[in-house]
Length: 238
Image 1: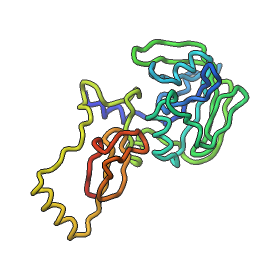
Image 2: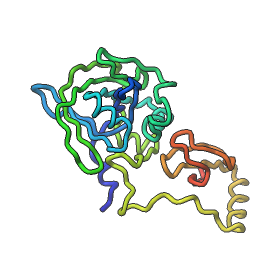
Image 3: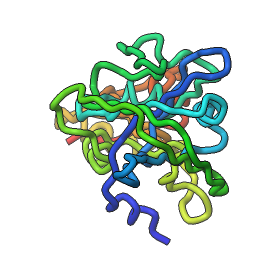
């Protein structure tokens, strides 16, 4: 199965939020939110069972949705998509507000928000499908929504392992640490590139984050997903 075929489906990119039992705000990025009925207005979202956000939605019975716009960067998506609310406060460094039902939403890099009261839950194996009534909705801006295709093609982002569209598993090889080139061949290539004024970049094999630099420090940590230098590949910039 070619899992890249799923990228051809039309998805948006959304921030799903909830409050845990202690009232702490949690959230994650997904591409599975959609309207499913018009009378009453109902919507659904599919969340991985291991997510802290899933636990919060199940306990509080509702979830908030922020529609991400094209200005959202990998730093924001990395915080909510590749890190866990069990480990960090994802809202600590982002501009956000809460609606009348205490569902958080971000006020930058977004163009709409929703609040959904859960009416049904369906166990899908790895994920839970939540279906509910839309209690509130508002437009936050006019910037175009970020699509999943835009995330892949423009930001060079990848799907985290808990995403519905994760391309790992038996049909796709797991990312491997970047292999070192043969010393003599690498030296020759480096010399040729240097004489031509070439520039180098490093790409994270997990989340797709790119940094333009000739060398990475040994203790470098990806600012998006938190992996080390061994999970970066070096490449020649155009």
